[in-house]
Length: 554
Image 1 (cartoon, rainbow, N blue to C red):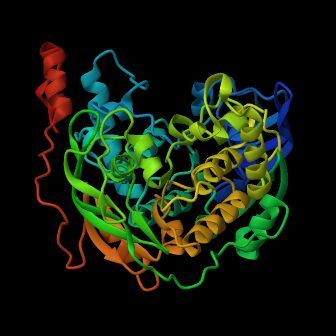
Image 2 (cartoon, rainbow, N blue to C red):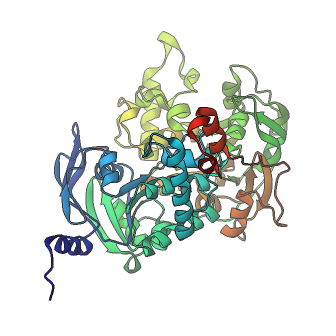
Image 3 (tube, rainbow, N blue to C red):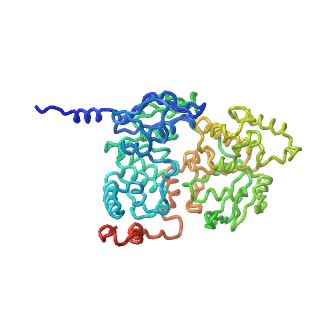
């Protein structure tokens, strides 16, 4: 009988070992202990979820695994072998790929060019691209990752761009894929397609690590799930043996109400009306295209849609942060003239409060203290200059802190030192406590942990029940469905449909978000530019002598 060689024994041991094992991982950032003695085992050929609140240490842990950070102490084992992963190239060499939440693609490059970028294996780019084209065909066939290799990234949907990121990792030989919040900008249909791809990858022996805050996705796609809280790993469970409620309690350390509890809306008079509104972006391109709708006192109107379909420009126009090109905005039946540098202040003075989509860029000055941000935009109520009533402003801030459970309860702490959820509460308290007629909220729980989400949702319902008109924009379809009394869907700057959240299912809303109306027709008029063989054209421009006809074939 033939003897077993040492290399065969090593291969057998590697095949039996976990794909990833982390032992005693610690990481400090100054006084902050981001990862505390983390142990984690990820079995080969599984989808392993990692959940936790903001600041729980999930991203730090995965950044250590992918070589962005070095652990202060602890061990990383890949296929049973210990490695000190020094950078992302080293991680890729070990078969670890990562698909980031914010895609790292060159938008004016083709799909093929993005896939080979940084992985060229020949000084003749034409040969590298020809080889990559064939490998992409095989990957698309095997894993359902269909995408035109000659399409420009900027012409692709977000879902297709995500496929390109996965293709990049697989092209580089990744056997272990880390996905960070992969469905944050996808329609439900695109998310479902992604899950099918992940299941196919798993069934073919790939190992998937999925970071997400959406417990529904954890239950739908993962085999096992690990929970992190305050930098520590507090539980690892078989997904089929747990529940969203149990996971939420493990994440927060207390019971969490996952469903929004609200009574029926009692809509009254129209507070906000938008008529035939046209709004352009910073480059003069129309992003809101003849949009009309109204919001009544005592109701929440939710706007659903994939990010980038005009919602941001719409909210900015209504709140005076962006000029309108055509159309009109009415508040309590009177037209609003929101022009010039004081337009946002005029909107606030008229009774429109605004919780912006990006709290860091538009809602806070993170270098200011908490009390300063608590009066931002409303400081005239406290005087100005040497006459500023600092004591009164701090007293109001303390009242907000108590009412909105802002932690830590320190009015003089710089806002940058609060967690994302508490920063959002500072903005919400400032806007909600001004007794507005209309509350405009963009992405109310973006980057917010599950405990703060529960609180924020309840406050939004409270405003509705107090007779306020609430206009809500969120890319989280579950959030829009659970909070809204009416849903309008935007696609490519148009309103393509309206739905009752009590009866509309996810599939119906998902089709509208993708631009397909109830009758199954395309929602907008226009043509999609033909995709040219961009790679071929560029290659010929670069060095026609080096490229053969065969290399340039699509």
